[in-house]
Image (cartoon, rainbow, N blue to C red):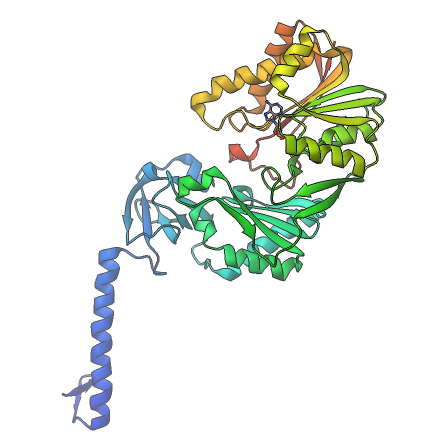
Length: 436
Ligand code: SAH
């Protein structure tokens, strides 16, 4: 073997032979790697490349983090579910990095638009730290939604903070893989008393994930007590609905303060009685809450006792649809009727049915309101936007032959940020109307 240095031919010494041997092997390796890169189209960072079709939806360019499978022209590289990929336009301009799942219609959920950003454990620590900084800036620290998925740049991740306890949902394969990093970030940022996983959510199955729940920290008593607006509530992090408590209504519960004074109040779809207990606390004469879930009713009655409001405030198990209809027929009257049903649909196919459902309960609700009283009504159905919701209320008023006037129209509390380019981050409608 002869070693070449800048064109000069040197006599082979054992030392030179060794260097030449390694140079040779390295050249081979680089060539092979080059071929590999060409063949599999890995991006410079070694990631799988996703190339979009020539015509990209403006949605993606405007900052929406979802890339649908039918927007993708080709994938270069061996894609394994959940991994972080780089997305490019058809002419190889960088779009972003995000986690991919070939099983999902949403093939990629973007995390960043910066090519130099490395997605690793530190990345997730920094994002959670940013989320916490934002909540502190806007004054939501005791109980808050610490991470609201896409609106916080962390697609399909939900983390609710209940004083020093945390409940986590990872609803896409991509974020599920980072669970240990998320737990470690929470430990570093908060030294929490407990972290619990509420991944018992059917939507995970669309991502090929199983439904599961359990401790992500040392086990702890998951029945905790939180404070909101000066009141106390039992929250069952393991058995309660969703993450245990509906934080998104925390400001709206305060909005009823004036209208419930000395009022007879009926609440339907009360869950653990939060609105009703607020009503009693704000000076209602009597409060009756209804929910179809026996567990929720038991918890609501306990919450009334916890706040020493049990004499004014009681809860019963009932199907609100039947009861509202029946009581409207019987011409029962209340000063304030409050409705907060669960989402009526998640699919466009059944949107019409959801609209009918909203019209029905609001019509019944209005009939139960004494002239001059108030209807407090909510909708958390994503597909029913604010305008549509107001239209439905208008139709219900027409059919109930009642005149209405709007007292306030609000949305979820700001710890669930709304991103104007992401429609589904603006999901909660909360309306108070006077019914004449
Ligand atoms: N207002 C509550 C949240 C309500 S969630 C709060 O702020 O905490 C919706 C509730 O509606 C759930 O508790 C659920 O059990 C209840 N629900 C669902 N269908 C119902 C029905 N047909 N009749 C009465 N309650 C129902």
